[in-house]
Length: 427
Image (cartoon, one colour):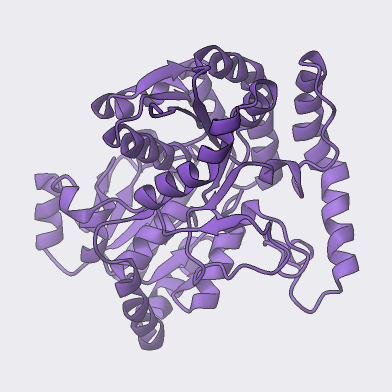
């Protein structure tokens, strides 16, 4: 039997798309023909891997989406993402359906990329869903932290009935109109039955269901899907990382280790964050590295103890920092864990609140919410973080768990093929 064609659909920022790009590259390395469906903004990133890139939407869509996301309003940010996903759902489904090889194809996507599951339903081909962060998987035993407020963080002592009610209310008020309604409108046009329970059930209905995070980071409660497989974080091999730019190397060598500041690749409205961070460094007497590929976010005039760089490979950079202040994205969190780096997390939206809670529970991070992120408080938080010897020791103790070349992509390929091969035989 010939190798099945692999079709991968992805949506979002660099942190959302690049893990799937790495998965695509691993399938290519194993001899598969791979088609990748994403915004054309990412086409250049896929070019070296010999993946067949299929653009969905326009580059302008990508820039417009992230220019409109506000790090102070997580509900509005998620609603905007839902609108963009709804607009791309039918085009992505149609593109995937057109590229399916009748002799055998495996369809892969993320939790919110519904196209691959629709194509699997209409063609009978097997599919795999890959969760990048544990917040995508609901539980009434250990529910994810979905926001900054107490009512959005139901702990283990809360009765399960109240947790179920909280999920139901969130679905009725927000998730159904923004996500389920457009999905069911397309399903009706395709002659498919409506989805009744989208986030508790349907998004996990795949032949292979993977989580790209280890069990020590997110111990699975018993009410998670039984067929879910947890793998390693999708970390790149440090040996293959590009060298740091010369200007950055010179800055690192010129004084004490700086603190890194990143708002993530999904936020183009972080001017206030970088301005307050620059002032915090001045107040605390720290050197700082401002990481953003949006140059307009960064103060135009920086003192010598601060440097702005649009990008640097984290595998090489983070071990040379004193600490990292970041948004709580799962990829950045994993990179900081590997570097054994103290973290100050400023969660903004999406899965970031839940990731922050898990980092705090591991004893490797503290949190400062955007509403409280002002220079004086940030300076105090950084001073306390850098002086916390117990936290620093915990960071160093966990780091060896993530050393060496990453195995997540190889693990994911093998798990997907093992679960999908029996379905291919009968498709």
